[in-house]
Length: 118
Image 1 (cartoon, rainbow, N blue to C red):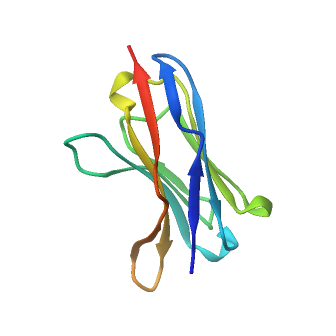
Image 2 (cartoon, rainbow, N blue to C red; image 1 turned 180 degrees about the vertical axis):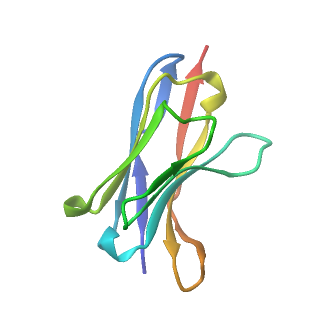
């Protein structure tokens, strides 16, 4: 059973930075892709960033140039560095792991709240 635990959320002023961490209970090299999703109140969950074991990364247009996803395989941890935060980035952020056989993100953390004040 894969467990994912996020940390690093909090309250920050617009223009500030936060780094989210996602610690996995298994080697993240065994998970074909890791992603960060977010869900704001009244909105659908959206994919923010995605990183594969092959080394490719993708970002939502709204965060390109501001957010960076990275991974430390030795620590089984995935990070989301968030810079130049905007009030629109306020959401619960979730770490997720992709299962290749099911072709979907099936492993989820509990979420961490990020609040950006104006």
